[in-house]
Image (cartoon, helix red, strand yellow):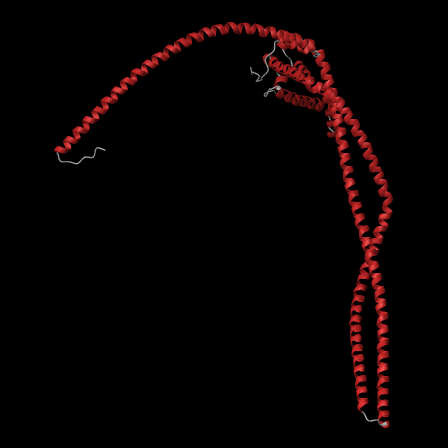
Length: 447
């Protein structure tokens, strides 16, 4: 017979019968003396149901769903086998939780009396252990239930506000979408116009620079001609003062000077016309420069609008991400609320079951206390006997310690005498060897 390796104490058959009866599983002691597979499976499943709420009814629906998905021919045969395997799996996990590592199908198919009693003792003790430690958990759940309800209401209100904000933002986005599209098209057109204007501006700037250089050259040439005319006028005045007054010569000189003056006037008129043309071109270029500046300012405004649009789009994307995060948080809170409600219902059921079985546990605990009191009285008697034996052993141990001390003292005296004889003998040997070496005229090292 294989013994069950468990940390829970073995219960009596009467305690097992009373515990199972309190759970609504009536049995008789004869069933434990001669266990059958059906009886063992039933009581094991009853213990499993007290902790996990798993029984044949809970397993039937998932098994049927799996068989429907598998599309097997003989579903009845496979359903019975699969249900048995699933229950065996959960019973094995339950046994491991109860510190039973060697639970197997043999314990159900070929049950033994002693092993069945030990397994049921471990299962019942484990169930009672979980029920005792679940009571504080249920009290904590009740204390936190109000906080959870308040938090749920707050989260619901916050979720509604966020949903309204999201709807408002979505409607605003829908309203702004045509304007954004128009701004995109206008931005593209302004970009194209800007690049074309920039090319024209480069060409015009080059022409303006060329015309400015020409204007500067013409002004310098005009100043040079004016200086030359002034110098020639002075020379003419000086020459007139030195020339002899001759009418013919004066006429010829006047004719030459008139022709020269006419040519100079024509040259001056030509230069003035060129200067007027250049001034007109300069004015035109100034107007073009003003237009280019206005285009540049418009381009800057378009860039600002574009940057503002990008910022709005970025905020819109961030808001979308925030909305998705809030939706995920809402789903998590909803799942958490469902889990808490489920845990609260399970805890309430366990609490009700614990209250129903409180009197049974109290009676069982009273029996256990009486049994432990009897064991304690027996242990007191045994302890007295053990104390007498310990006193006797202590006396014998003290007597042996005295004999050992005397023996060690005698051995120490004998060892000291032997050492004294050894050193005396060694000294005599060294003296003899030294004397012998002196007689033989030999040098011997005694170090």
